[in-house]
Length: 115
Image (tube, rainbow, N blue to C red; front, side, top):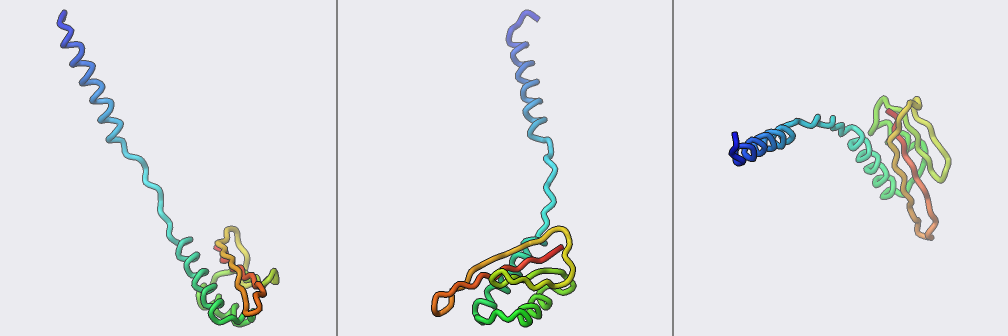
């Protein structure tokens, strides 16, 4: 065992085993939940529809909300005036945007969906 090459090759094998062991370790995959993305997309679709209609009547907006999110609680705010829909629960996904009219009057619309 006086041969230095034997020790170097033993160290190389051990190092290779450690590196391959680290590379083969599996990292737990994160649970991907696309529910929030779907809710966010629906909210933005409603905001686009309301922007095209230029009609911010709370009763019509509430019907649109109930159509897009059946059996779900939420809240619609138009210039700070809130309209509650259903029950408020813990978490919420919200979107907000501002619209400018023909005379450049700003209307801020916010929509929140409770989970």
